[in-house]
Image 1 (cartoon, rainbow, N blue to C red):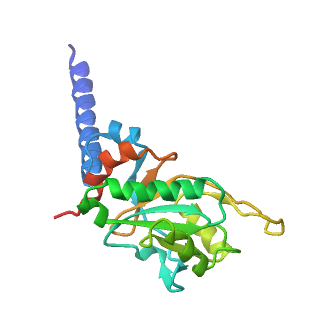
Image 2: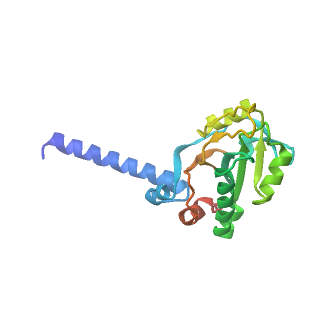
Image 3: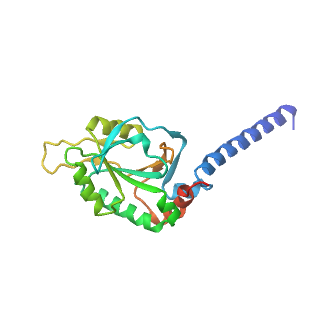
Length: 211
């Protein structure tokens, strides 16, 4: 092996070590060490946390809530609406089931949030009534359309505003969930459709409170 070949070999080895350590740090920081199992469960973690925009919304109790202040717990955020005929009730029922499958420490460190993409019909009162069918602890948020679009664009969960002049209109939206860390930043996504049997195995290490 020539000197040049040895140098190239050493450099390639060093790059591999650095990349390996970087990936390990990212995954370890999220409480997971097996990216294959994470992806298989539909969990996609961002390389770097993403700061949420400074926006104010209204919760199901009519109180103002800054969206960048959901801290101290992990949060799963779903963009949907109460008049949704299929994906929304199914997803919320799955999230209720998932909470019940998680160990107590992980369950107590998890917040579930529904962001309405139908501000025309989803009043705080309507959100509270609807979420009560699934889990009264679920948080509902609404806002005017520009605020909703800013948030959805910031977390890469797009939706298509509905033509509200049509009777019984529907809203096209994603079934993916946004993962927020206890520091209030976006940490990743959970891809739809949800697989609770796999998620219950992978989420506890991520959600477990850090000592």
